Length: 89
Image (cartoon, rainbow, N blue to C red; front, side):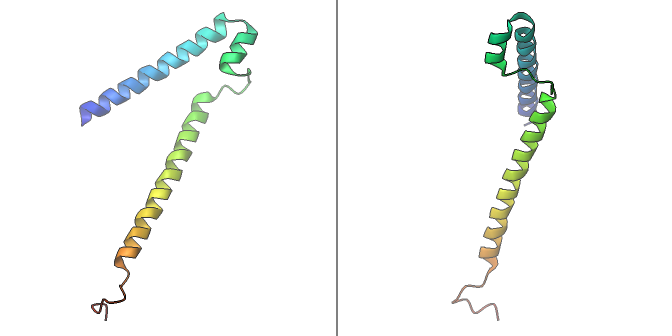
């Protein structure tokens, strides 16, 4: 299992480095119009990694909360006494 986590982490790291290098290359070597077509309009807010991490965390929290609600509802439904069950007396 740790091998798999290692390789997933390594792949993600290599992917992040490759995308960062490709964007830097495009910013440095392409004229303004094609650069804005590929990368979007230039912005002064270059905090892209932090915005990405915040968005990923928000999505994770949303999915975690949804799953937690599902599990809680399943637990409540399972532990609720049934109409024909006399063992709850």
